[in-house]
Structure formats: C-alpha cells, structure tokens
Amino acid sequence: MLNLQYKANRIGIFDSGVGGLSVLREVVALLPRERVCYVADAAHCPYGSRPADEVLRLSLRMVRFLLDKDCKLIVVACNTATAAAINALRKTFPDVPFVGMEPAVKPAAAQSKTCRVGILATAGTLQSRLFNQTKARYAAGVKLHVVAGNGLVELVELGREDSPEALELLRTYLQPMLDGNVDELVLGCTHYPFLQSSIEKIAQGRMSIINPAPAVAVQVKRMLEHSNLLNDEPTSQPFYEFFSTGNVEALMQLQKKHLPLPTERRSFQALTSL
Ligand code: DGL
Image 1: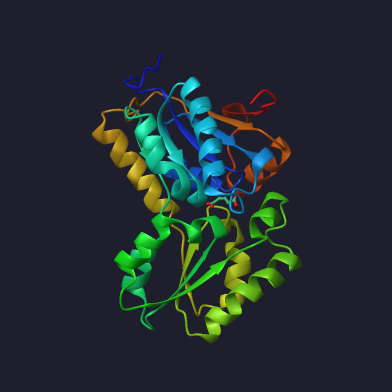
Image 2 (image 1 turned 90 degrees about the vertical axis):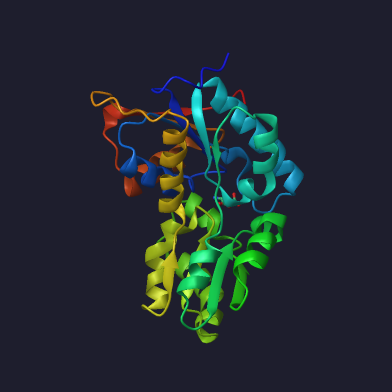
C-alpha cells in the first residue's frame, strides 16, 4: 500500500545511470532534510539509443521499484526517459507527483544575444515529440543548433568525463556551434553537467552553459510544498540510498567525486533481481 502522505517518506530519483546525480546534487543542496532513494538502470544504459517504447517499459520498472520503496514523489532525472515516458507514468500512477526534465530551450532563447542556441542531448530526446513541441513553442526567432552527443554518456559512466577522449569528442560537437556563433548551450542530458569543465575548456567563455537541474530541484520543492509533503522537521536526518541494476561502482565513484555525502548517511546496493 502506498503511503504518499507521510512527509518523511523519500524522494525517488531514477536515471539510466549516474546522470541523475547531477539532479540529486541540486536536490540535496535545496532540500537537505529529505531522504532520497536513487536508482540507476545501469544494466540498460544508455537509454538514448533505445526505442521510445522500450524506454517507457524500463521507466515503468524503475518507478514501480521506487514506489515499493515508499517514495512520495518521483524525479525522472533523465531527459530521454522524461520524453519517452512522463505522460504515461502520470496516467499509470495518477496519485504520484512526478517531476521530469525539460531541455531549457525557453531560458536559452530568452538569454541569447546572437539568437543562436545550441542543444546537446541524446538521440532519443531529440527525436521525441516533447522536444519538438518545446522547440516549436519556445525557439521562435532563434536558430537552434541541435546535436546528439553520441558516446558522451558512456564516457561519463566510465568516469572519463575529464579525459582527453571526452575533450576530443566534445570538440567535434561544440566547435561547429562556436563557429556558428552560438552563445547559449543547453545541456539536454543529465549526464552532461559532469562534462562541464571539459565544455568550458572548449567554449572559453564564448557560450553560457545552461544546466536545467537547479530549476528541477526548485520544482521538486514546489511540488512537495503544494502536496504538503515537504519534510520540514528540523531534527530530521537525511539518508541517501543508492541502487543500480548494473555496476554500482560507477555510481559510488561519481558520487564520491561530484557529490560528497557523509559515509554514515549513504548506502549502495546492486539490484540483481530487477
Ligand atoms: N541521463 C540521461 C538523459 O538525461 C541518459 C541518457 C542515456 O542513457 O542515454 O537523457
């Protein structure tokens, strides 16, 4: 039985792999009292090259797992899964508040001085109806340079986000944007914020980098407040439970490097039965 009304229940977060940690990082900063259950579907990563109906099936499995863990709100911390599944998830679980990712086309278009915006995302996200609707709604009057960042998710999963390989691959995606006078770059995949320092080396200040994760954390807070589910108990202690359907080590390494958490406040577990 779901007990979604219990304020101390956890926030559930899922992604195909380690990318959702870029969202978790913002959730932890904004909502330090909340307990979180994070699941990485590493056995099926990357999602970006899979057909939408398969991503939907995998997302349903992740959500069922999180609901079994008594989560009160679920963050689909994956642009690809949001595009393929969020509508169906909301229909299937009408009582569950969901927060998804959306490529930040709107703020990028508003901020661009050259009226040229770059979007780096997975092939799955770029082919989706959600992305095309967002583009039609918010990108009027700007030229979009849309690029599928094939291979980047895999490098981040391997912990090679700062490697010469990552820099080289990013250069092939970003140089044409720079040559085309793009001044705003939207990170349309939750793995990509971990590539930020490599991106900055290439961009040399010529493009602003837009990571939608902080806005997603604000939306999580807003929805918890709205449903009266925010854990505002001053003595409450957070705990972060991490699960992976594949290599747990990747999750542990990235967490250590990019989101340090006290050892006694976190646990890691491989999911063999999912
Ligand atoms: N982090 C995902 C996203 O935001 C994952 C991509 C993938 O698994 O291909 O799209």
